[in-house]
Length: 440
Image (cartoon, rainbow, N blue to C red):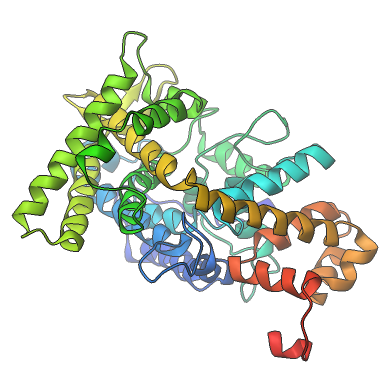
């Protein structure tokens, strides 16, 4: 990669028409890319194709981009320093945040979080290297995707690339769970140094994209859970101690969750979870009556109100630990920990009721078995090259050792949709009659 050919375009507080064209180019390159189209066939929570109303990675990404764009516009009118062009990392250009949101899940493999978990386990156990969805974004954007006139990558602006980089670390240390693979980190680190980004800090645009991703998870996934019958809107369900205990356990077992919400030792976590869930149900009940007990309309209104509640709570504060600024929920010029914890509880409610459901677990076990067998079929170079598409093998042979065979196999499997992974699995392991050409 020639990092000096990266588009280093940057703007001041006000976009000129020429500047805006740069981000519109990014937007067009993203939405017209095969990687973006494939998101329609990748699971969000429920398997892609499970129903007409459940979200996929594509619809999730579109919803995150809408939330992030609108919040960026509001914050731009609220915080005067954003217009002063003090630092390229201390700006919030709505078009940049929108592009980053559209691209933030490109690196996720088929079958949702289970797919990422399986690939990471295989690579760490056999090769001592990780698989990480956020890092895979940069594999796609900087190397794997191709556009006309470019040998590799989508040639995105520096602003958009850094807005996608919510974990500004290199994954050369296997103990680190989130970050960027070493090869792509060379380019990202070059841009960060060029911008004078503080070590370990991400741009405001990356922070906003990340927070809006969490807002979408904590509202939209619950709406899907209600529609699927996994979350039952009744007093018995929300007062069930098993649900409360499950949410508490997920929070305590998740280091990222504990760090993000800053639970105080004196906090009665069980009592807070119970209160949030009870308040959530009482609000739904009130809206249900207000809208003539129409459940579908009530669910949409409930989702809209919570998105609005979270989005309107987003602000920017000084972070004394890093000397940088932080995008978070803000109330009275301080971090709104109450709202932050509420969002975390709702995220864990979605996880406990859906991901941990035994039917979903069965589907994930099936997905795990498929991905492991696909990997085993492709892992050996001499065997794998015979059953991979010729252009993948040609690309590997041409790059002359830039990355190892196992990384190419991970790239190929990660790029699959749920349906395509099942198709290839069926071709390799299921007994079928008929011409192979009928299956494409």
